[in-house]
Length: 190
Length: 105
Image (tube, rainbow over all chains, first blue to last red; front, side, top):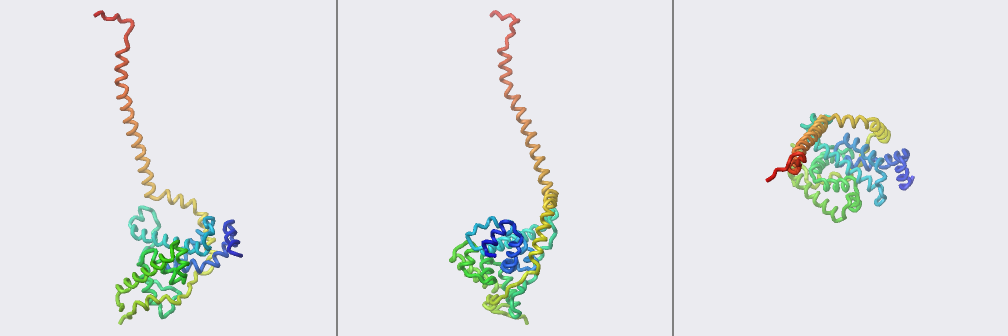
């Protein structure tokens, strides 16, 4: 099935087209979400959310960019929304009995161990992910897309709907900030 | 003794990272969730309107609305009677009884 046929099938609500989309793009969505959320269980849930969102809002895809670019955008937006919601829940957790929200645990999770990192780099990668968490949203997105997803600056720019120079600047600032954050971590030599 | 790393080493620790894989049968789980969400759409509305904060807010809104209309009506009725005062006085002034003889100055 070509990309055009896939999009047409999705617009018609075809389950076979949807199944193909999930099978071909699950790695893309899951890895992007995992890099941003740094939690395996949450990433599984958010990946499902992303695909449901894609299926329900495929009519909003105008074809101005590649389907993958649009899917990346949906994945990033959904993951960031999830992070914001979680932070809000944590901040206003004392109001949950009044608001009638589910009492999900909002505790800080232990250091994230990405399943794809080589064994001898696990500890260092965990420190890096901890530092990435402290970056501003747009720097974090640019860094994850470039370093974890391995996308080029041009592809990152298309996903973030910004210019190439803006992405270069974002990544430069992200690296500077990461160095500062890592310097402040204990037991480090520069 | 705890390990110490150079910052550059940490920054490069994601080089050569492998792709992670989600749990198998993702499509089946997504379809199951979509079906479940369809079923629970009514339950979501019920849960939303029965939230204590929302119920309280709706209650306060209607009490406020009632209070506003009651106060507004009271004010209007006072104004109407105030506006009628000069008209009534004028009516009395011009209302000459034809059966009463005019006073001869």
